[in-house]
Image (cartoon, rainbow, N blue to C red; front, side, top):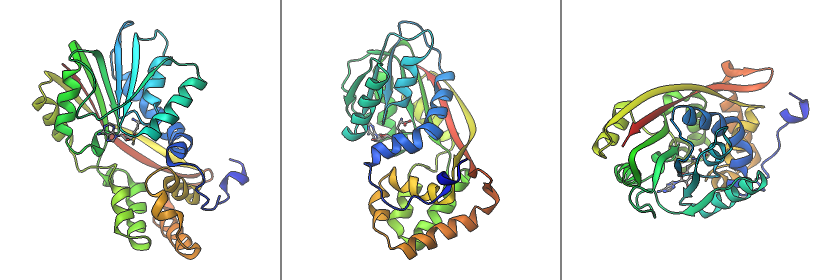
Length: 275
Ligand SMILES: C[S@@+](CC[C@H](N)C(=O)[O-])C[C@H]1O[C@@H](n2cnc3c(N)ncnc32)[C@H](O)[C@@H]1O
């Protein structure tokens, strides 16, 4: 790792959060997890695939690009700005994907319009996840398959435990709540119940363990700030508060610091089911 990359980059959170998400979080985190989701799913050549809560579209892009290919791919998200970044990234790689704005609890598609529905790390942000699963089943045809991933609770994602606690002390409750929101208190059994109650017949749950690496503690905090709704509360904090925040995270995560920066384990539920 070049020394230059380890230098704090300051708090110029100049990009939009979706651009920062695509630049900082997708390559080291969401792209490798997208591969796991795709590997856990059976595809056939003519499958019509829907990626719900697609964000900047990494799952949709990886499926479209996979050897063997699939029939058609649609990415749907509630956030227009995420979709704009998705569209630009797909166009750059000349991938044919349809991007739609919509809510997973009220999908703008007819019954049975897809063969596969995928959802990576979005259900925890949905106000009614039961309705989301019902809708995902409704738009699947006979033999349809769903695969979804949701981070395990915060205590299984140690880097973010320490960041959330430091944010609470140095920035406030809202910043802490935002940092906790991707990690719901759901057990695998909770997810299994949601899927069964939605009418899916067979399901399989696995616990997946990976890791996340940042070039430094400063970059861990800064990139998380830039790539999420935290860009607002963290964009304007005083330098001394920022330093105290980073110092606290550095001390708490001392055991995960190595010559290449900082690395820590991340755990996710992965669920697959048949219509
Ligand atoms: C952490 S991002 C994950 C994005 C993408 N699946 C990925 O792996 O990079 C969560 C996404 O869920 C979207 N989202 C949240 N609630 C939604 C809803 N009700 N319907 C559709 N998308 C939603 C957000 O806009 C955001 O893009």
